[in-house]
Every structure is written in structure tokens, then in C-alpha cells.
Length: 241
Ligand SMILES: [Zn+2]
Image (cartoon, rainbow, N blue to C red; front, side):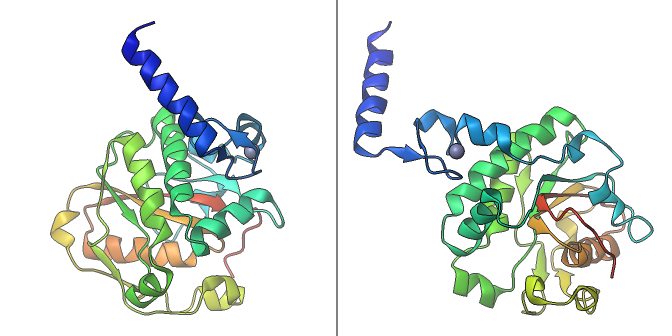
């Protein structure tokens, strides 16, 4: 073993003694090489495998609404699951590093599926600036950064803006979620997106209405852009109402 390697391993050993890392999902102690999620939780994540199929329930939500190239979600968003708690922690609890780590993992799966190989630009679903200020960050941005690292694409968080600070979709009735999304987003820098394959990224898809609003704005402003999407989680039962 080289001296340098011994020194690096010693550094990691001392660091893990001083700052033991925990699994982001179950809280078990793990090594720093596991990127925040222990092997058992990685096995137990309720994955959809949607990214391996060109026709899947997440993408089918937009059938007849928009020409989507590819679309997928990583895992199911289920009530009381640890994975759901995890999303709440990185969304509202300031733990943005989780979003990045999960994005990196999801991005590696997307890359392996080969459907997402030619993505040029990743657009994190924009929050309204007031909400970003209140929260301190947009969690979709960190997800997008993680996915971008794995896919080798760039992230553009300024080409699309949110026009209104509407109430949280989670608190709205299903029918209300689809109202007013047609002008909820505006493309401010269409020249950056022309002719590109764009991946719109968000954390959770419930009805898909907000995601639809963002993709519609891009499709309208930049008709020659190809649009795909990737959400980290998806609710299992879908309604267009
Ligand atoms: Zn765990």
C-alpha cells in the first residue's frame, strides 16, 4: 500500500471517529463512502423503475397534453414512509445535501437507462423568488445539480421564471391544482434553450399540474426544444382532476 493511500485512509478513519456519518433515511452510522444512504436503505427504496421504460405511468400523465420525449420518477411517495420524511427534511429542513446525493444516485440510474444520454440542459422547477428567500434555497436546484453531475449535463436555473407565488400544491384540492398553471411560468431566456434536449427536474409529482405548467411554458416559447422530465418521487395513484 502506498504511503499516500495510507495517509488518505488514516484521514478518513480519524474523520469518521470525530464526525460519524449517519444514513439520511434510517439514521444508522455509515462510512463517508456511502454518500449518505446505507446499503439496506438502498435496497429497500420503493423504486418505480420507470426510467427503464419509455411508456410508464409518470410519462403517461401528459399524454395528449404535451409532446414529452422521456419522463420518469425515481421512487414512490408513500404516506408515513422514511423516504417521504427524507423529502420533507431536504425540502423544508435545510438539508439540501440530501437532495444533491439523491440526485446524483438518480442521475446514475438515468444515465444507465440510455434514454437520458443526450440531455443538454437541466432546468430545476423554479420556485417563486419570495418562496426561495423564505426557504433559503430551491431544493430542485440541488437535485438538478446531482443529476447533472451524473449525466454530464449543465444546469440552467435562470432561463425559466415562476410568475406567481401560488399556494403549496400539497394543500390544494386536486381540481384546483390544474387551474392557472398555463401562465405560472415564463421563459425569460429562450435563446439558451433553442434546439436543446431539456430535462425539467422536480422533487415530487402529485398531480403533475405544476410540472405541466413549466413544460408548457418551455414548449410554447421554444417549440424546437425537446422536453423530458425527471421527478425524484411520484404519488402512486394518479388523477388528472
Ligand atoms: Zn439506512
